Length: 224
Image (cartoon, rainbow, N blue to C red):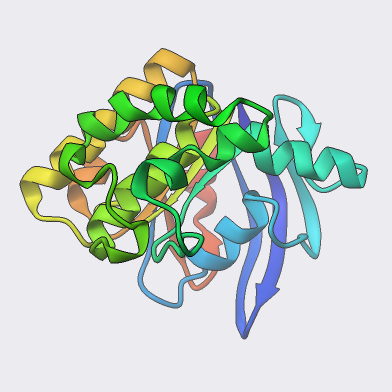
């Protein structure tokens, strides 16, 4: 479960103020708002990349930002997964090697890690790209690989930044179905920053940011 308690933060001129909501295990939330509303700033704080100026972020009751250095590494590697809008794969890796790097960081042997991610890549329509250089993939293909990478360790929470933004409607539907299935199978809480109405349609909760704030009435409903 993800609990966001009165979080305020700033990043490159953008701010979020007094954000509070909960997202239960297996639930999908859509984080919506115009460009400049604070979505990126909030996602960075929730994902553990940036510390909040005020407030707390709890994952399964543990504070994401009050941990030892080893605890932060654990949070980033095992407890959370991040799907970037513009992934940057390591040079020289094939698609399947890149998708398996998170599992290998958890000390799984390379062959076993690649066997584990291969069916996930195939479910997302990437069978023909498995052994191509990851850097040669299109933005939409690479984001799907990043999704497999992020979900490979069955994190408690998945943060996804515009995962359907570069996809046609059919592929976007496949990606959202994949996210729904894995959220259910792994009991993963999923928060998706998006402008896509299709994401809103499959979400259990919708969080709308306006000028860095979540409306008080909406917060009460989300926390009720």
